[in-house]
Picture 1: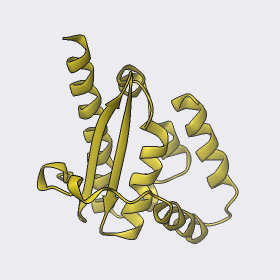
Picture 2: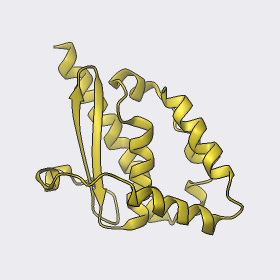
Picture 3: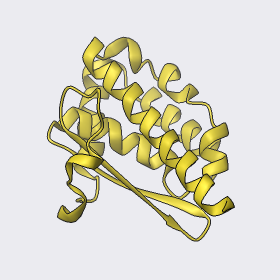
Picture 4: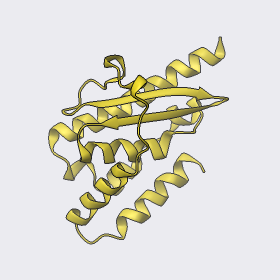
Length: 141
């Protein structure tokens, strides 16, 4: 699936809910489904700076695509990072770098998060893009 198709699927899913309490519950459910990160990746160097809670994000190349794994010590944040991984994991660095993140605005995520969580979301996106830049540079050498 393309990044755009995955984002459209997420928008459709969130549109099924009538209010934000239901959307928060869904986000928490998504977080619970996040595969457990291997303990070896729970290192300080993999912690995303700018997040209120601890978020570990690790990436590795799998042929031409980047696989991400992540975890958080906060259940809502875990849901946010799980959404981002659903969109960007198993995609090429080029596709990640040129992708927009319209789904965040479309589902109203930024406006319904606290300012610190919204900043954390931006930090997570930024780190995903930085990993893509690094992997792209590694594969072009």
